[in-house]
Amino acid sequence: MAQQLLMPKATAVWLVDNTALSFDQIAQFCKLHPLEVKAIADGESAQGIKGLDPIATGQLSREEIARAEANPAHKLKLSEPKVRVPESKRKGPRYTPVSKRQDRPNAILWLVRNHPELKDAQISRLVGTTKSTIEQIRERTHWNSANLTPMDPVTLGLCSQIDLDLEVERASKGRPLPTAAEVGATLESAQETEKLPYSDREEEKEIDADAVFAKLKSLKSSSPDEDEEDDRF
Image 1 (cartoon, one colour):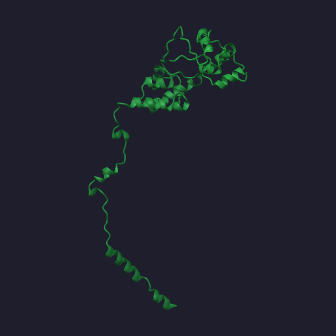
Image 2: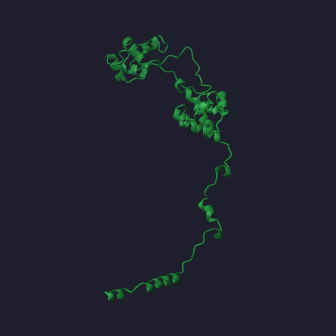
Image 3: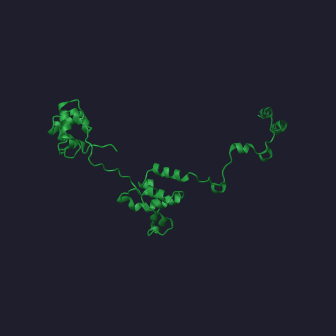
């Protein structure tokens, strides 16, 4: 992990007040804009911020400041830390804010019911709980089982949808595909129905043109003639 400057703006305040460094040098060292450093020097910015001595914190040496003051093109460099603290790796369940911890049992119940393929370790990573709590909810031995309501952990803000989808995808790998009985009756595709023998399909009835015209003639002959109707009047 790259070393970073502690309290950049407070350090910039101290450098402006106690050194002859240029605005550009201070801005480059503190990761600020030169105009922001100029505003600090003019008293227009950071008025309530107390300067932090980078020499006292071991992040800058007096020799480095002197070299930069003598050469405006020189860029300040952070001093190597005397003690290196190893980067801590998070182990165990995810941290859950106190305000949301009461919702964890409901989220666990939702995951157990809707995603039974998830392992206890995956549920623990998602909502930040222990395996014993998951086991109690699975076996309905939790002290508050009667009052639990399944609730989506994403809606509760206990995990993101991306994390949930990732864990579900991991749990689904290697699982056998569901059988037809498990899925239920489904519609057959058009390709399958086209393979059926002709006897299984609904036979198309041929249209007899002569019979149709004969029926039309009989209907016309049974109706009164238009000329005869005119003679009546």
